[in-house]
Image (cartoon, rainbow, N blue to C red; front, side):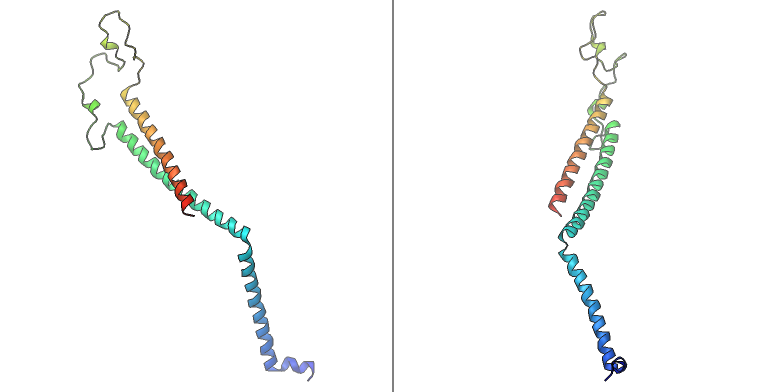
Length: 154
């Protein structure tokens, strides 16, 4: 048989097609194996995926905490207790005339100096500071909790 006859033989053409197909499959298999052996590349991909998942989780925790802190600050600012009632300080008798919260009206002598706590902040300001302090503690706890959770759930 001559070389020209080999190309026209249908059985030979089928074998050449199968060989080409097998080479293609083998090339794909080699690429897949090379990707599995690329440990540094896989580690980077996994680390990137875990970091993205952690950032999303931390952002959700921060948003939730910020929302709750703002809600708590509003409640404190408006004097609403957890049970839906008012704080005791809000139910107290009205302030005496000239009472600016400094305690100066408690002086008995006309020429007496104001009380030592005359620079004490107002109750509303104290409530606001307390609310923001609680919010900061809550945000810190939520962030720490998210970090611990992410480290335990890779």
